[in-house]
Image (cartoon, rainbow, N blue to C red; front, side, top):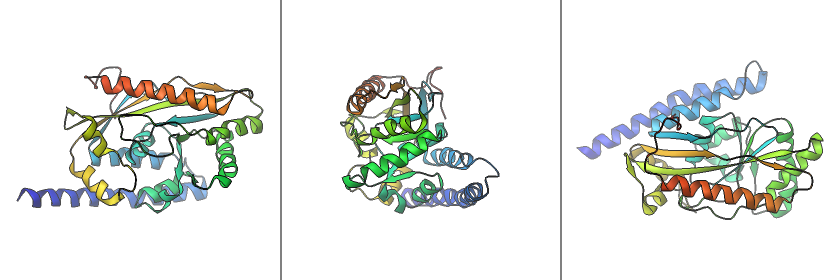
Length: 275
């Protein structure tokens, strides 16, 4: 009986997501084609609604930087990270090419004007960096999952510096003194109100060749999840800056913020708004 009820609840959640996804996709398509209204409203609303359906509560420390151009350097744990960051600010994503084919998320990634990259093809890196630089130069805050893959949520992998070169290209295009790189740490903290240990956090993480649909079903069935987003102090990237050093500096800040977040025992505080 309990299993049947769980299946019914899962089906209802999927139907609910489908019910608002199609109208919002149509809204976004019209916005992109006509320019009659902002093309940032529908994605942000979709991310927020979907987090509610999934039972994911987002706690925030700090805020998105006001400076532009802005490249956001974040750790990466799961596809949920996209929903989390997309619910908080009008940002655009630098996504791996495979995301195009994901159910629902892939369609919204395209409509949100994500930049798709092929990390395995190093010969395409300059062109990809140029595409990101053009978006930065146009004032779009771009999210770079700088590890190049997902981690287990309890550590930060080394940041890959190649796409940080987009910051230098944006500088050249705009003739501005700085592009700003803002480190962000995403920490998955609780499930069902109880602190996650390393093993449980690894189950929420989306690592390696894990299939998307089974992982989605697991998240839908897992109950409430608390995740904290820590916005760090932006790093000024100047013409004389070394992209590898900037990447290392951002990595160190993200690692420190993640460690601090995972050590916490109280997550919902007055200075930690919940969405």
